[in-house]
Length: 475
Image 1 (cartoon, rainbow, N blue to C red):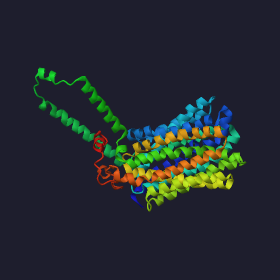
Image 2 (image 1 turned 180 degrees about the horizontal axis):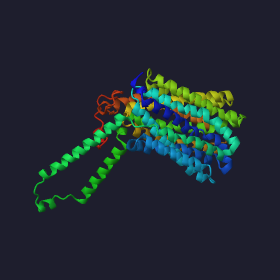
Image 3 (image 1 turned 90 degrees about the vertical axis):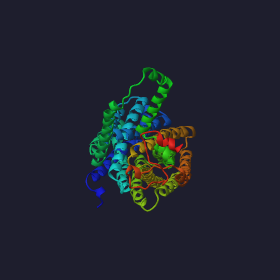
């Protein structure tokens, strides 16, 4: 057995796996409550879809701050804080009286969910290097299990207790995310390296203070007054220092070094929009062709099974096939999967959600593997923040525009044809990945001690995120 699978690494995988199950259980299966929420608040499809849209988009937007919190306070504190925030939002949503109040509650649910996801993802990254893709695949299977288990449970709760009771019960179950997050113990090696860095900085500052009295020289006051900098120059230095701190805090220069990572985030922005719209409206679409509600909600369970299979299989396939190629093929198959649902038959609905679930699972795994290879483990927290924030834009706009399109046409088929076309456009964009590899500066992973992945560009310069020097060298 490899050393990575000994000790606390296994606990991290199990805890992250359980956290994924609880997280996706409500945030991605809330479409079951769509008709109940629409009837309760007497809203249009676009207004009701905005509830789910705000929640899921906040789950993406919050990853920017989740990555920063992980870098500064650790994975455990970040994930536990997110669990408390999501629990508070879910309890508050069960007592909302207006749709505007639901918007606010759904925002806190999504924000807490993003911090949980960031903590779990970064924790796995710190404990696994050689077998990261397999560990990430096992953790991500939790998404599939969540899709599989929560829809029938929520459907039964909806029948027995209504949508408010359903929210209360699911919030109690989701509270166990805090217990899972408590197991995200920082790795001892990372703690020692941080202590060494802080001690080295302390010794450097102490040495400078000791040398300062010996270097003091007598300065003529008239000369000193003549050499006093102007206020404008002083302000420019302060602005430059502030930009340097922002750059170091968010590690923004990874965007200037890896063009492929930029393309990956843009692809995430584009493909999340149709994915979010599909997951929200597949159940109402099935109901319009005389599929009963229980069978329609079972489609999400089918999606979960296929998503789980896609994540597991892709985590193994990437050892033999380049992840970028697997990512591209999955986008193409996703476009065809959406078209299968246009035959207005329950069998084709099952084929559609199963194929799309497998493709989305594959895209999720391969995207994380590609990201880690491009930016390294130390930058993973900030990288997933950039990656997810653009996905939040797509998740926010997708269901709203899809709902407005249905309100205008009163036809789901037009919506699903557009969704298929967007997935195909993403496939076309993936063909730019090999070209960008030739022209990007790259991030020198070996210079930062990440020996699991070779440097994507042998001509890259050492990565430095503590100053603006790296961006200056690329301009």
